[in-house]
Image (cartoon, rainbow, N blue to C red):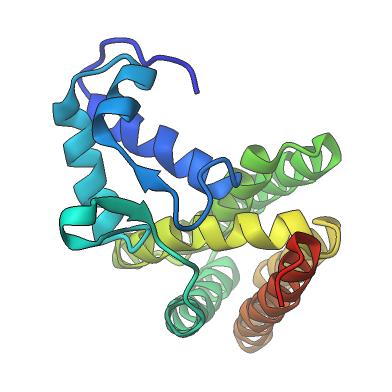
Length: 231
């Protein structure tokens, strides 16, 4: 983790730096987060660290244990399942809306196709590079593309807090699950249905994709426990 340079959005930078280390496993579940140490390591004052901790706590990524301090929260199966349920509903709605827009006008179809193909290329390049952070960013980027393509501006704002939590979950999946290309094959299937204007098929594929993601998480968790020697 490199010291952060002075910037107006310093709290967001601190938040992102800590989140990245939680996602890549550097800060494992149960790690005690000492604000003074984090501030020194990042080259900032305690204030942005305190503010970042509040955001991380709100997102369910850290937990405060009274006088004992703040710790990286454990992955909670029930909470993950609830986030995935909401994500499935939002993604289904987004895919349906995007397909309906693509069917409605040629201009909309062209715009959606251009944006969709661009994120597909970027995502597959990230998988090929093996860069975990890039893989997560472009995976989220595909779903943000769907929300934007749906024409409903409320979708992306509604989804954003769930995606902040799920970034960590996705990192767990990508570390221990099957190759990331499988995810992008499913993204391709969703995009193809959207561009064909088939709203029902796009919605079905989007929901299937989220359910598959939940299944990959369950398998990844088992593999992660096995790799660490946990029972």
